Image (cartoon, rainbow, N blue to C red):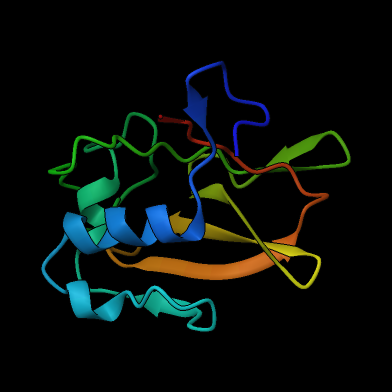
Length: 132
């Protein structure tokens, strides 16, 4: 789905996010491609996606290694024009919908794993565009 991304780019699907997660860490079996597995997954995948240090992430920024070169930042969320959780959490939408909700991923400053679930599309989370 191109949607809000520039020409030649698209919002990644749940499948594409799962592929990234499988390739980012040491526990690829923890990331099934199905659309039913939610919650904390993996071992070090979240840390391998996060920017290192504490210039953007709050301390302790657990497991941050950025070995994937994704350089995930903790943009927090927006709800009704107010921003919250900046520095604590990074949220990223996928293009995959399920029952009126969309799949997303969370990375937390105190966690090296990835949190995966669905949420209402009315909330302001980050989007990462992928080149076609």
